[in-house]
Length: 245
Image 1 (cartoon, rainbow, N blue to C red):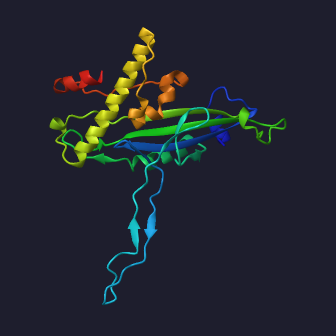
Image 2: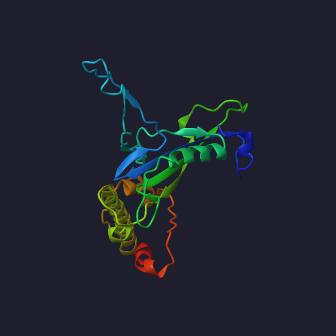
Image 3: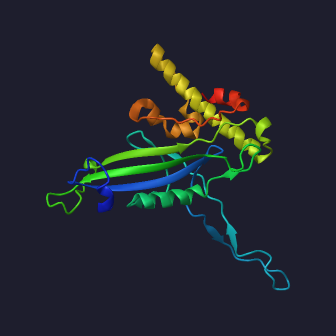
């Protein structure tokens, strides 16, 4: 539950309810979803020994994190299955969790950016509100009276032109997946706009990208979407800026 000190900072708090805040942090890398808060495991493997009694392999091996799957709940809301959610009791705790995940994001050096994001990231904040009993001591155990709100802070990796970034090998593959997901986002927005303005009922290709599939409910009107575009005012970046706008 939120600490008393933190609750005083909020406006319009119902004193007859209890509140809890949960946070999670994921990244979408090469169209796969990874949990940035999940600690990587080590697989204990029996060492192999040579004739001289010397181990030829360490008894532990690093196991890379497993990608997560998108699921749909009974209310048709999309969520990341198996994603770790941590309860936080203050803004300071939330920032600590955020920076823990931020350090694990995939970044790489390119010709234009020394720490270029190679993935899209989503920091999710969930607020749960539940009514208290008449004495104000216990939470009523009725899930139908629990209200959930969610705020997603999304950092989209920027579109790239390999001629300018000097990307090679893995960086080219990453750039291709970044650009494709951004193109899908643009296509979804254009189809939604056409459906609204022309009264058509074209299918929106949400499933073509994990980013748009995860947030399909927001685009369908069950939430609000705000976008901030980062551009460079230099004349040399005019074409890049024009594409983004």
